[in-house]
Image 1: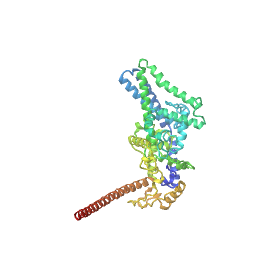
Image 2: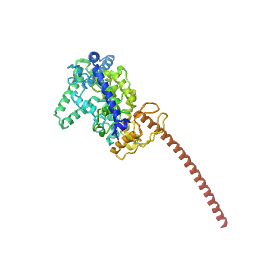
Image 3: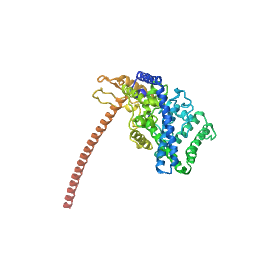
Image 4: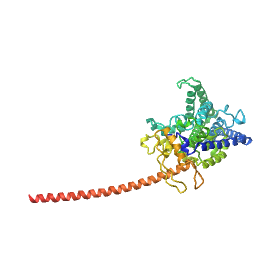
Length: 485
């Protein structure tokens, strides 16, 4: 099952988590107090560059009957759409630049180059996703309603189709997000989904109609004889933008290490635990300045989930402080290359398309779905710098687990400082030690299997020898009886 008690899972006390929350609050204050001309110059420069790039792409596509002009125009338009979508539309709609009080660069006025409307996206994403991040049954972005991304969700036969559904979602990502946000808007407003003339539907179709007309009618028509090649270029640019946005989002939410949480965790959750849930429920991927710009700096997904309304150009510097806190509290800082993070998410998509009984691991210790129960029943060996860790009690139920887990942490002083190294011992150390135990267990099982195999072979040889001896005796008496007759 998903994590029900983040304190036990993270191997931190309430005091630890409260202090961690205060330190993260301090990081936020430092950034907010230092915002100024440098940041305003950055976002205005990005907006200007994106618009110049898009204008150059549109101009180049007037000659798109030429192969090279088509390639150049399509490439520039793709990049322009990606920057507008990731670094501008997404981040401005999060309110990251509202502090400037610029009516053009404000979350209440910005409408991005996407099928869905900004208000519907903000309602579904800014509130629902960022409040209930990775809480099963509360965060609708956990698989976007069509993919099973955790074993906490019951397997259904339709899940067998999710490898194909994943390809469709990637290619039509803007439409998938728009329809997802439309459904969320209807649910929050209490509007029937079948109501075609409802206000959410009218807003959606008005925006979608403008987008379709702009990309597939107006701009192609403006290029006259080149309208057909321009139409292909626009469709290609939209496809490239969709695939890129899909990959960035999946790399930040679904690799191994991006944990899932039960609804019990959210009940009475203090600010420190909310921060910790964002840290453990998100994943980064490695990126330089160019990749950061192209991903809307969502290569720093952990920092974005901690501070969704802080300007994205500050995430690289914030990441250094967040990583230092992870080291201080011995917490994992989940990151890796873009390719690695996506392949992990891709593996989960295909693996969880299968019924659970076909899978080896459980919902408590699978790489994509784990909980505090993964530490239950594990007797950790004495490490070079750590004392032996006794096995945790097996819980009769979730409430009993929370109580017994906290008692176990206090009794065995797992949270705290290693007396030998002076370093804090937390989740990161616990995970490493569990890996050691599991490796030792596997090696032990291999030895046991080899010994069992040898024993069975020896037993088989002994039984064979007895059967041969018995056959010889029976043959002897048979021959003797024949001679006596």
